[in-house]
Image (cartoon, rainbow over all chains, first blue to last red; front, side, top):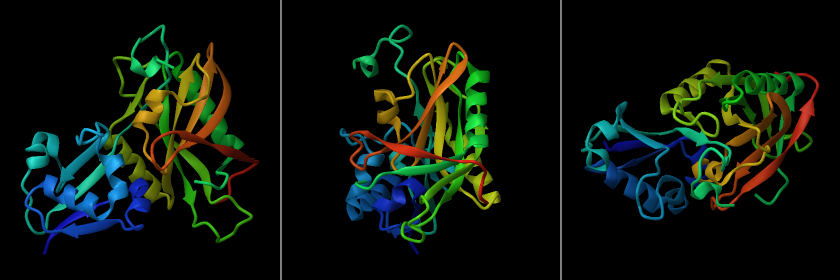
Length: 105
Length: 156
């Protein structure tokens, strides 16, 4: 038994086309560290350069959003399923509406 | 992503995206692209990716809907389930750029996922204009344009 990490479709190409991977991990953070350790190309899509989970990467343990648990310190046990679910964001640069770093160019 | 990217789409689907952009103006619209993404090489004469239907969604960015869109994880999950229920794949997303060109912004790039196709429709003064499609480069550095190959009818 181990913790199963479900890999979303857009990231499978960076994980040997696998839809899941299993690790022995005591927390969500440990599982994600092992995942990106095994599949290094996944890292930039899940984490910022500073090592924080990207804001549009949502992680669930057995269907529970880790933001409402203990985030990456959320404990995991054998048989748990960790799901990575994308949220989608974007939009145009409209300097007249919003001046910010995204409208710099 | 060295080979030229293509996304097949039919006029009826394009019209639905334009319509959603028009109805949402001056706010941004957003939704999911449902279709197929066959393995390359199965039939080299056909694009590997094809949009067959859209799944319109509510723009959850209430604070700045004129220049931002947001699809929650729950909405994304619903779109994925809907695609599966129709025997299709969730292959990407569309949104509108009200009074702005159909080119991805820095904000689009920073928040994009790889692999997905991102269709953008420009809506000027409420009228739909250019429609383009893009994919994020593997290293997240840039969006690469993919050619929209327009078909007259959907192929199931």
